[in-house]
Length: 394
Image 1 (tube, rainbow, N blue to C red):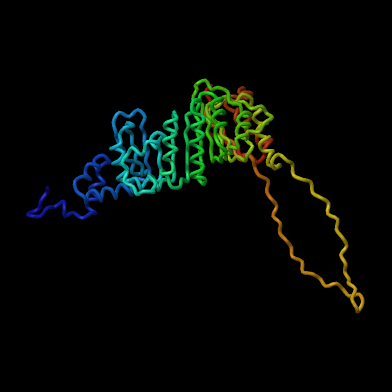
Image 2 (image 1 turned 180 degrees about the vertical axis):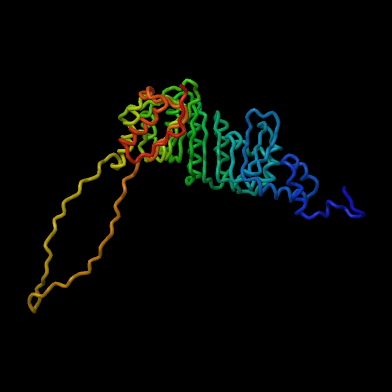
């Protein structure tokens, strides 16, 4: 202990000075320093609660537990083996209630009861988390059941939910049960769904196993290097049958086929994004997008009704009284303002990005996307087409 005469220096330092000193050390060192005394523990834990609002837990491929704090982003990144229960218990003790955003996997949440967390009965584990990014890989029956048993004690009210699903044909039903539990528990949250698969058949079968749900964004990502075919008409049919509505749709690393007779979506789209895909027939894609946009003039596929002719009757200007015919008193005319309903725009924006191949326009080489823009804006005048992020490898 440093001394000055007969006085001990460090115990008498103001909290302000100690906080300045603690700012010079990283997260692992501070976790050791908090064990010096109760005062230091309180100061360091207060510092963590102010500086850590996001946690990312990675448990795949880690041999030993470690943590890294990124102060500018208020983020704590944890990588640890799946059995690091004591390590995680210490992390949660320090800053569990300050977490507002979380990135983790399903198996971690399913086994959260194995980690000692000091919380009141009836209180959620992560009551202040509003934004969750959940990775779902191999959700076997055991992990799925454990998650469904405990999911009611995890979060209070999620505002943003992103589910990244690595599709496995063995677990179509389990993924559907997990998604359903989130929808019932957090009906007001904005849900983003990412489906990663090698074949389009797996994507379609997984969508068929999902409940009816409104999505803010859906991403369909191919993990096969050879870019297998994804038929947009089949995707349209499955999403309509399951009543899966998405405001934004993204396709990545597929060979896209459009038949030219089926819209790409049955509900209004804000953005349809094609990233690093091979478009098999540009003409058919343009026709399918045109059919999507044409739905704005219809309601549930029914054209608007024709206006009925209005026959005006002659107004009586006089009435009969005991004194004879007298002018009819005028009534006050109250004009009603009826707002015309604007037609629903079924597709607002198309984005083409990454290394895309536009079959039918390849002879134009690096100007292929400009011809695509011209064709689309001609048949769909209100469509915003953005090809600024496209690039070619000739």
